[in-house]
Image (cartoon, rainbow, N blue to C red; front, side, top):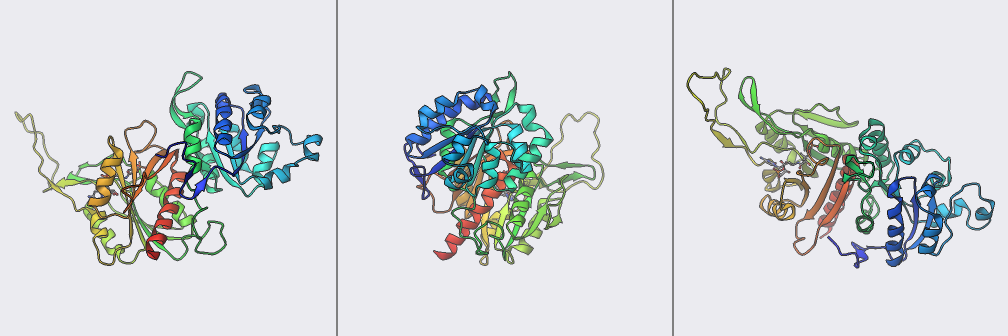
Amino acid sequence: MSSLSDTRLDGRQIAGRRILLGISAGIAAYKSAQLARLLTQAGAEVRVVMTEGAQAFIAPLTLQALTGEAVRTSLLDPEAEAGMGHIELARWADTILIAPATADLMARLAMGLADDLLTTLCLASDADKVMAPAMNQAMWRHPATRRNAAQLADDGWRLLGPASGDQACGDVGPGRMLEPEAILEALLAPAPGVAIPPTDGDGDGDGDAAGLHLVITAGPTREPLDPVRYLSNHSSGKMGYALAAAAAALGARVTLISGPVALATPEGVERLDVETASEMHAAAQRLASECDLFIGCAAVADYRAESPADHKIKKREGEESLTLRLVKNPDIIAEVAARADRPFVVGFAAETRDLEAYARDKLARKGLDMIVANDVSQAGLGFGADDNAALLLWRDGEGESGEALPPQPKAALARAVIERALERRRAAATD
Ligand code: PMT
């Protein structure tokens, strides 16, 4: 993790950036004052736009005092339009940061509405767009908000958080706005698509993976014990499928090797269904030499039954225990990485403690180029959840702190992971 006094990371910095801070109507708006202060202290030029509802939570005057700039609240304000008009303001910003972003604002932005100053600016601006959602946990979990979050991620918004925990309304769960310090930290990280030279030459992020073949493993494996029972785990496939969708959206040819999951195949993705680790291993080895990038997101069973029973194992009278003999499965990703004709290899590490240390060990031991470490002990993240957070680490990065991607919908995280992997692959190819 970087320190907040370090305002320059990965070639990006806060000083000199023109940040339009949008504030919508959530109780977390009181933290926006601290955020504005941190941004100005870090040397950014900050202009604030508030929705009408936001003014019920925090006074424009507070933000004006902290930024030294008049706060804009209305689209139809002749005085303000006579100065820096809304289109000029949209062009002025290099980053639009909305914190907090309510469910209502997310819905309006996802639909492309321009019914107040803030939504109009978002529609009229080419700036990097980042938002920190904040709302009641049930609103965040609602399918409509999930759809809107995925749409916004698809439209290029970077969603930071929300975090999980106690909420102002008394509920507990995901929906808390990230702390201002965490938002600043995330802003310092390279924005997806910004630092990456596009391969299709138009700079819009679409087609950045054109001409590349990605193979992605996803979901759990099932190791049979007998014809009706198996060993498995809680992987839903959501993270791997989100990666496949993100890669396809960037123009890659994508082959998804999928364990048994209840998900639809993302558009434009070729899917190979497998059941066991051995089947996944065979499919991965077959495709390893013809792909450019291999991502192991599947939760592969480390062991399988040595001899699955041909018939249903019966309970035996008088026997209170049953011993199963398990044997090790092949390490699929380590074998891909050990090939002479290896692609760029990205693994995942699912950990419940000592995230960074265990992930660094897997990165080295399995010979990976990059690893996406996720803490699967956190409620609302990881296995089965719609959201995830990750620490990205890469080969030869021992002295570096890695890059923390805060909690966000898996669709948004997947996009960031794919873009970082493409960037690292390109850098490795030119070394
Ligand atoms: O599917 P979801 O519900 O969306 O959940 C997502 C996830 C938590 C499963 C995903 O984000 C994740 O962490 N996937 C990797 C899970 C895992 O098995 O991690 P691991 O630390 O045990 O394995 C490390 C790496 O080795 C992984 O890339 C894994 O795919 C690979 N591996 C492991 C064992 C094995 N025999 N062969 C492998 O290739």
